[in-house]
Image (cartoon, rainbow, N blue to C red; front, side, top):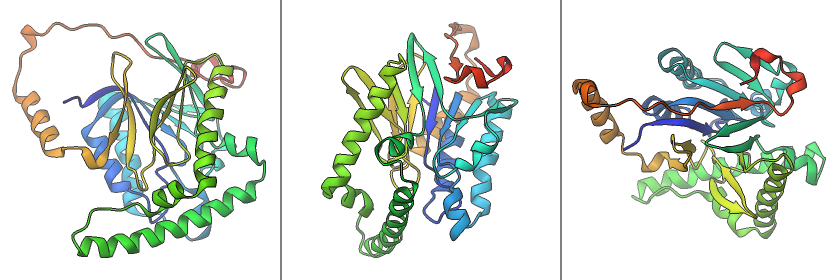
Length: 290
């Protein structure tokens, strides 16, 4: 059971909204460690906070967990802005210790290059109309409200969780077409930047697949799917779903590692370092480039 990764990518936490699974992602990050943590957009939902959202203690705890990862494990954290936290445009790019806030980035690992961006740039490519994005947000918020109501009665009936919004998106032809076009366009974008893959979020649909030779990796979300992308030290990517994690076994393994000291029989193999750079090098001072 692997609990330490080279890189973990999470997106679409939407802190400040009722649907955000802040407790779950904080618990997830407490059990898993990594050298690099990439927060790929829509971590804070500025749109909802301006309207009817509210900031709660559990949302603050998420950032406390991030600070613990930096302090205890020297984790490098990269926060990439999304459309719901576009207020970050006013300050980025910026670096404070192990925390960097950027628009997007290029991640190099094990001989491959990945373009990492939230993915909302696709909306401007297809529509260039911000009000359409807001309209979609209103509809999605309503579906999440209805989803909580439906699952309240399902739990009382002993039925498993059911994602109403995912069901609707899977049935509406225009939504299916949007997702397909979204994935294909972002794969083209990665190729145009000379990259082997694209890592994104935005559409709340976790996915790993090959599109015309380009690796398409979507980390999903922490509103419904509760998923993350993780890369091991050999360069292999996988999706981790919160609902499939056996936390008891992880805690047992962690306790076992603490009480067993087998350092004399373990050879330490040096790991290949991770190289980071922003695609907008002219905007980022040399001290921020990796």
